[in-house]
Amino acid sequence: MQFLFQLGGKRAGIVGLGSIGLEVAKRLEAFGCIVSYNSGMKKPSVAFPHYANVCELALNSDVLVICCALMDQTFHMINKEVLSALGKQGFIVNIARGKIVDEKELVRCLLQGEIAGAGLDVFADEPNIPDNLFELNNVVLSPHRGVFTKHRRQLYYPKYQ
Image 1 (tube, rainbow, N blue to C red):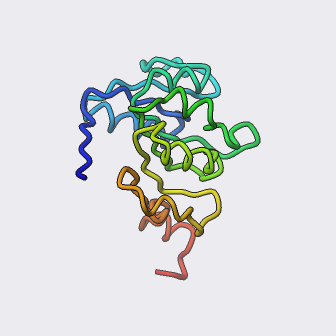
Image 2 (image 1 turned 120 degrees about the horizontal axis):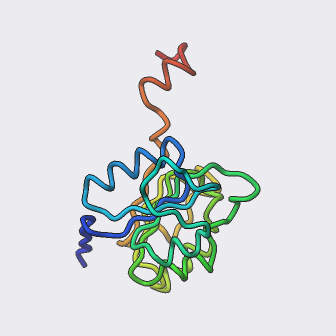
């Protein structure tokens, strides 16, 4: 089965509009997405619509991109309620921290067809990844490599140059 998805025109919700989330928003906007966000506080300098509740953001998104920090308040923030709000046509992309998403619930939703798909760069128990995710054709897995940029290596790991 071939899986096709066109990004342009989709409603993209970003959870966490810090420096990374803002860069993601700019790129999604360049692809023709309608961007909105959820963040601890509304950012007055940002023109994107703000949702105070992540579940409301999911309800009004086709793609939910997780860019927030892992804290007590964000642990399993993406749970059954949020995934249900995202719906059968919705996709989740997690580039933040694995434990922000209730991974067991995510796997269940993917297996049951309760969401359309996922792009995952992080996992709850890295490097262990749920076996079921490897079997799904609507999931893209990445080995959490985004952190290993040349600049970051030079800054934090100079002895590995």
